[in-house]
Structure formats: C-alpha cells, structure tokens
Amino acid sequence: MSAPRPPAVGPRHPVVVRLTHWISAIALTVMAASGLRIFNAHPSFGRPGDPPFPLWPFEGTPIPVSFTLGAWLGGARHWHFAMMWLLVANAVVYLAHLARHGRWRTVVPRHGDWRDALAMARFYLRLRHDHPAQGKHNALQKQAYTAMLLCGAVLVLTGLAIWKPVTLGALTALFGGYTWARWWHFAAMLALGVLVTGHVLMVLVVDPYALRAMTTGGYDESRWSPVARNARPFQHWLPRRRPQDGAPTAPAAPLDPPTVVAP
Amino acid sequence: MSGGPLRTLLAREHAAGRVDRRDFLRLSTLLAGGALLAGCNARGPAEVRSLLRAVGRGNERIERWLFDPDRRDDGDPGRRVAGARFPSYFVSRTVPIWDPAMRGEWRLTVDGAVHRPFSLSLAELQRMARIRQRVNHYCVEGWNATAIFTGVPVHALARLAGLRPDAAYVDFRSFDAGYHESWDLDSALHAQTLIVVAKEDRALSPAYGAPARVHAPVKLGYKNTKYLTHVTFGTAPTGGWWSDRGYEWYGGT
Image 1 (tube, rainbow over the protein chains, first blue to last red):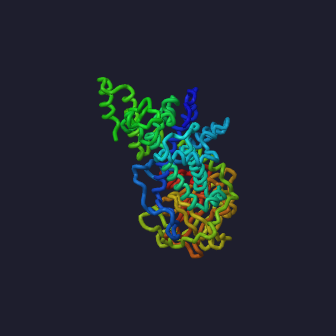
Image 2: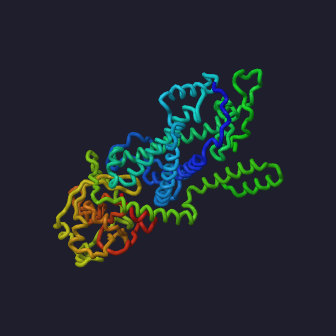
Image 3: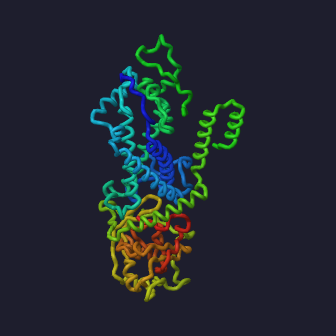
C-alpha cells in the first residue's frame, strides 16, 4: 500500500501530451477506417497463383462498410496518404517529448515490471487486497502503452514497405516481401485496435478521472488516483459498500464519478 | 445517427433547466461524435477533399524525390509465377482485340517531344533487343503477382526517337476505349519499364494486352497501359484514364 503522495503540482499530463494524445486518437481512427476501405478493394492476403494465405481465416470477406472511410479505394487512399503525415508528425512531437528529461521512463516498462504487472493482475482479479504502489502509471499500463508504441512503429515501417515496395525494397524484404509486409501492416493495426479498445475500456471501468486528466489536465492525485481509490474494474459502477461489509483497509472513494462519461 | 433533432431537444431541456451545463456539454460531445462516425462512409466535405488533393500533390513531390532509377524489382525469388491466374483487366465491354481487317496493320507510334518520330510494326518491335524479366506487378487494390515479361525497354525507343530537351513526360495510349496513362520521364526510362510483347515466353494474349503493353514494377498496375498504340513524349503530364477518375497520377512503387 502506498503512502499518500504529496499533492501534484501542475497538470497530470503536460499540454503536449494531451494534445498529441487526442490528435493520435483522431488520426489513428481515420487511418484505420481508410485502411480498412483500402483493404476492401482486395480483402485477401494470398497472391494470385499462390496457395491460400495461412494466417487470415476471413480471406475474401470485406470489412463492413460502416467501419470504413473514403467511399472507394481511390478516396480512401487520399485520406490514408494525407493523414499519415499528421500521424507521423504527431508521433515525432510526442517521442521528442518522451526523450527529453527521460520521460520515457513513465511509459516504458523497467526490468522488474513483470512482478508489478503480476501484482496488478492479482489485484484486479481480487487475489490481492491493496492496489500496488506505482509511479505515474501501473506496470500493466506501461506494458500496454509501450506495446501501442511498438505497434505504431511496425505500422509506419510496414506502411512504407507496401507504399514503396520497389524504391524501399530492402525494407519490404525485411518484412518477408510485399505480401507479408501487407499482412504485418494489417496485423499491427488489429493489435493496436485491441490495445486501444482495452485502453478505452479500462479508462471507463477503472479510472474515468483519466479522461479529465488527459483533456484539461485536472487531476487530484490524493482523491482520484486508482491507488487512492483502490480502484478495481467496475468498482465505481457498483453501489457503494456500507462500512460494515466493507474492507477495513480500503480507503473509500471520496467521490463517485457520476457517469461513464465523467468530464 | 443524426445529431440534429436530438441536439435541438437537448438544447430545449438545457434551457428549461432540466439538463445542467456539464450534462449538456457531455451529451453534445457524444452527439457530435456520433455525427462524425455517421459521416465516415462519405467522401467528406468539399473543403476536405481539396485539402486531400493538396497533400496528394505534396506526396507526389516526395515520391519523385524518393524515386531511385537504380532500385529494381526482381520478383521475389522463390515466389511462384502467377501464370494464367495473373488477373486480366480492360475497360472496354469486351476484350479489346486489334482487327487488321477493320483498322489495318497494328503499329506502335513513338512521337511527341522527339526529334525523329517513328512507328514500328509488331515484327519490327519484336526484332529489337529485348529484355526478359521476372518481376512483380503491384495492383493499386493491394495484391501483387509475379510474371515473366519480355519486351523492349522504353529508354531504347526514346534513344531511337531522340528526346527533345524539354521532354519530361510520356503518355502511353491504347485502343482500349481511350485508356491511357501519362508518366514522369524518370519512371518511364527506368531499366525495367518495358514495351512488353510476351508473357511467360508466349506472345501476349488479348486478355493481357496484346499485341503490346507497358509494364514496369515501378508503377502501380493502372499506370501500365495495355493494348498499346502510342508512346507520346510531352512537356506536361496529360493525366490518364484512372488518374482522371481519382487515383493518384504518380502511382509509383
């Protein structure tokens, strides 16, 4: 159990983090939706004349149109090849921010984080009573966020590989050729989609205050942090426990967030 | 999901004091998000489209700067040749076939911004020094396929015709319902850009663009005009069948 930490000075996330976070959210949505429309022009990975592609069970099945952007292949390509610059420029700003003063340490897991991640998992599974002590993010978060950054790196590299398979042929070959580079591009998109979905769900069910912290920066660590609230998934959605059946050591949340979409 | 009526209702509730300011803002954001998602399948508003076009022109500059005439595609050794499963495609209603009874002998004309325009019969074209190459074909749709193409490099035709110094583009025209695509000169003079007369060592069949077609791994499939009749060098880009219909003009790989 962590001791209450001194009140935070300044916003939880600096403005550059908040800005790049939401730009990423928009740019990635546009990239994914237009990418899926591009995929729909040929919703398979197998090459003409080759045996069926082993890693995609839905060969030939297009993505439902409502998940796509661009109306047709050409339109989607224009969106994709325009938004990619915003995404990359945004990533450069964010990575430069992380690189300054070693801020990447708040996101990238350390060597011993596997133990902390296990402790977090045990806490979420109610095998452990107290929220493990943590820095800015808990160990599971750091692993998830780092995995997102890695997915982003794979997406950019495989994207270049299938954009310029001849001019950047060495890069394409690194991913096993055009077909495989296209598959890795798609797989990294799926992986990132899963991570983002998990991220959004965890914000809603564990730490809705993060939504404010990531938008206006406002955050009262001593009252709202998951550590202070000993927050497990869905805890704030459940009726508040009465003292007699409550756990003696868990500090009660001073404020229950009113709705899912807390500011 | 439509934001309009719900938004009006929400505003009325807000004015009546039944919805507080924070709830109003919260719900408005949700409605706006829903409207954004609903708009996702559209091409987007006109301002966005002109912005996309502007970025596309910037992309073209970057792609032309990135282009390297020394980068080749050698068709992934170990990958099998698609052969008859190589997709076939044309824009006419039926397979375009050159009928000598109707149109006379097929000839390939090389003209435009050149000193010595000329035309060749198929036999003359086939007698020129040819290159046989195993290359990938990259379709804009996302598939690629390997083929063995034999043909005359465009740079050989350009040398024969003698390019004028102001020649910077070339238009490949066809007898397939007006299909054509213009290229930047650098890509056209790439060592692997061929006027193809044979696929897998057999004369091109009508499905694959007989009697001659353009093929280069450095351009997306739609830039590679089939059923070729004219190689016209020029001083400005002259669009193309697909480039005029919304695919990017450069289409380089």
